[in-house]
Image 1 (cartoon, rainbow, N blue to C red):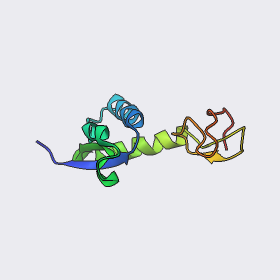
Image 2: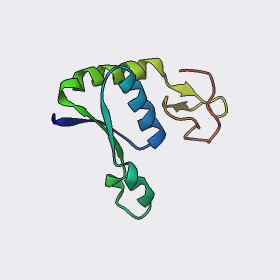
Image 3: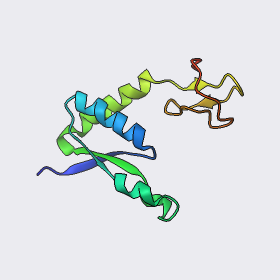
Image 4: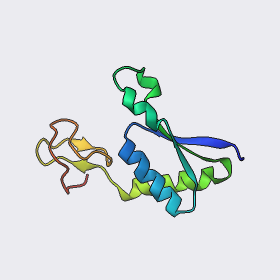
Length: 105
């Protein structure tokens, strides 16, 4: 079996599965690690609660390129309520918890 490399650590399980699906549709085999540890939130150290995406070393560069294109397609957005800039992965404003708007920064 080929050696694997950690591509990214995501704190959000939904985001991790979204990235996994996008990468697999591009032909990259992805393994999610740490999914079972999310049940220990609040009891386990925060450093081990991340969900990680792992790919074969031979597919690492392709996966990295695909992840970069994903960021380009999902710009930051500006909250219409408090005007705070939010990362593309946030569905609620981190500042005021308002739902995501369609205004992009």
